[in-house]
Length: 426
Image (cartoon, rainbow, N blue to C red; front, top):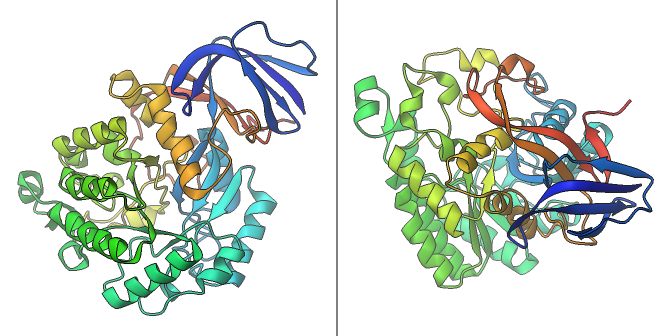
């Protein structure tokens, strides 16, 4: 593969630049970039017409429901949705049926993904068997089998001794532990964030302090063990002071935020719209704006989709009983463009959080426009307007809070190792 992209607006998250230029690919690797006259010895030349060329998104926390819930999402449909959304690497969660907690289940998921997904898969494994919080998995064997991180997802390990043992072994093996900080007692059964809105709607709620309490415990244990730790989905201003102290103390910690918590707030739930029911629940507008600022300053490292498919039967229920989560592989980029068009974040900062930082945290070579890096790229128009119709989404499940929303930002083409995977070529 010998391809030259000309007349491109290069979004380089590593250099922090947004500039006109060209980029060439040879054998699936970025061979050169520049701003002057491009070389002419390429078999294929693509004129980008001034549109944005950026690294493909590395999306941490994608749930693919194979094998036990294929009616919600499969590796094939998730891969197609990812390619259409500019996601070139899906970092998949282990909260499947059965749980990915052994080398055998991890190998099945990896082989299945490689067979049918047009984008790369980087699988996570559970931290405890069955995500039950009682018995640690075989971290070393799973790491050797390809697990890039270990997480029990939204199942908090409430037994501190078990969690300390997991962190200690992970530290010895250089493994990354991801956690979803919450106090399980306070957050149990909650459907909304405590405050005037949830009270008026009569919804069971939880204070944002539940997140801070869970995070404070985790950070104390990380300080004790020296483990590598990532808080996958912070959502409240109350958590940031504790996290900032941990970073300043030199702990090996990073944090992520869900794109929905950067672009929506608790009032969007309106009259019990269950497609807006997430975990953690949507927060106040003050929390949302503070989290955006934390991404801009670099305190929050990563933006993810937290793609969680749910079928119609689990969403078309009273708000308290409805399942939490939203699909977001195809809406991550246009939702992020809301932050760009509002002036809150520029494109290099956005792509630093969606590509470079997650790749660096997981030790992956993707997520950059550096010479020698894999040619995982997206060409997109940040200004293209459209109205989202959830029926057109490629995911099997259609539970998006952006249905009917006016959005801007369309993916024009997606490349994995220099091969175009969207739009699919004949």
